[in-house]
Length: 115
Ligand SMILES: [Zn+2]
Image (tube, rainbow, N blue to C red):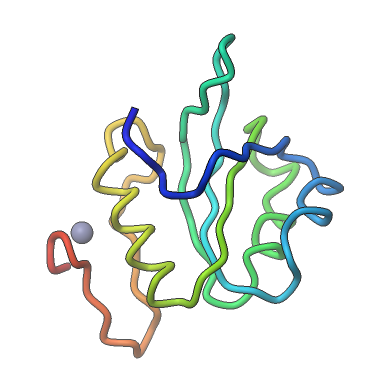
């Protein structure tokens, strides 16, 4: 299994868990997905927030039917690089159909494909 670069922790995708484990007001990345019987996490949807990854995930609870998530916090540039790496590594199994979009006005481009 390729690495998501988000550490080992996997959390239940529930509002009270999100509020407990993700710091408020911090940019970062998230991955939503499922686990198999042996506990292995399978990413299904990746994303990031340039301002507040906790609020972003709280807004998706209820609307998206995944059971688990992982997250990491970093500045918008690093978060974009990580999102691109995850997209290119896991693209075939993700429900993300479009390449990640850089922060508007940042001029950032994907370090893997130049998009
Ligand atoms: Zn790319």
